[in-house]
Image (cartoon, rainbow, N blue to C red; front, side, top):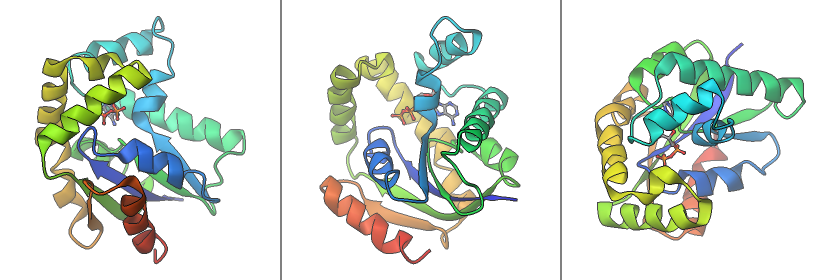
Length: 193
Ligand code: ADP
């Protein structure tokens, strides 16, 4: 059985987390932010150390490790009754994050829509990330070189996913609008899926 999923897609700082949290409180939606799953690991655990090693350089954690951890998260959420695969929709934020991950998860996910939160200017993304660094105490948000590296990683590794999922599933959303307008644009489309 494949998991019915919608993807929140976009550069770091585009607002995926903000929207994901709101969408996640709608009955039958489960928000899964891959970065949060990583951040919830203990920093002194083997996997926690791998996460810090890559994320502090602005790089992606290797695919096999990422997918394994994600499957564990979904398995646990199912076991504790937070996720009911038969009638729930996953709101995926940050996974799949490159084409190889999408290939690995092809038989696991039924991606019904991709919401591409597109921001016109990089400078506003950087400002949002830097504001968040202080609020959420994120090491990878604080340093400008790491932020630039993450934006590069996004362009090079994540963006090709748009072609992978194709124009029928990808919906462009203007991420420079207020959060409530972004939400409204997403919901208008999600309600029809
Ligand atoms: P952002 O999108 O703002 O960069 P995230 O919280 O989604 O932040 O991710 C933070 C870091 O966690 C990434 O830079 C990366 O190192 C790691 N990460 C998150 N999701 C994935 C993934 N699917 N594959 C590999 N690494 C990931």
